[in-house]
Image (cartoon, rainbow, N blue to C red; front, side, top):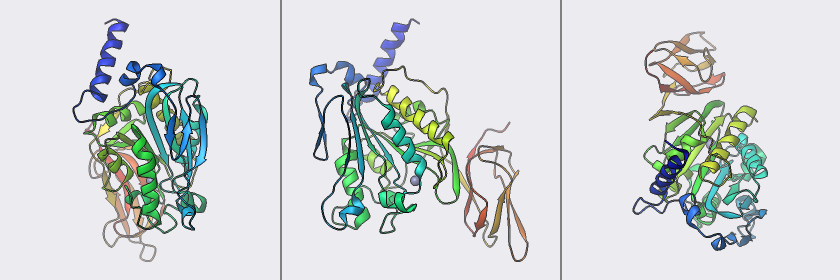
Length: 358
Ligand SMILES: [Zn+2]
């Protein structure tokens, strides 16, 4: 097949995915971009600011002037490309201690040139600013922000924060990438979590190129679940552990975001399709057995392929020295695990995806 024929087919597929599905609003970019006249592309207005084509702006969300407003405020970065395209939003540090995400956001925004970019990049680099400053996962009122979307303007500080983010920023996005790491004392292999039934989000996930795509649409009131419900295709990147900067995970995240931008035709470079990704419908947690809490030591590393019944780690009671062996329930790959620590019954030790026997 010739190159031009391939290009025509690709455009047709994009148009079908983003425009041709009845009742789906879709991206304003890609296929739309090809058809939108240059002169129709004007400034972008958000949060009372106007960002002209070719302009990059950093400002504060400024939710008000009350005492509690300071706990809701956050930085906002917007880059308006010279040419038409979708509005891609990047969110990081919903969990304030997941600092790899903040560095990915910073690098992406610094790297893109509005002269060469189509569409609009909206970055919320530190959503949970209080958590980021204090190295905490949770917000100032000790809540998990990722259980509060779409928020409530009359609720507690966390729900007001979620409300501002969701109604004033997220609803302006045509697509969303939410950046995370594992939570307390755990680390995750780089992976994309996505609703596998959402074709547009799945395509973004494939092009991101983390290597692993996991079917996890998220719980109700998480940002990705609510954004997806609002018609915004959303993927979530997980890479590494909290409260550490990890260059490999940061570089992979940065490259993944740029890959998605290229796929959405926001960047003037061919999409670097990342090749086949391993897609899993679900993962399985392996926990400390009831009554077997104690000192956990892993025997295998993150990313390892393990066989059914293979020893994954041990948990030893520090008083009785009785030792529980933690074994793989099936042939698996370890995509998330705890670091060595004191653990209690029910603690998650490993996150496994099922591999075909070999
Ligand atoms: Zn997180």
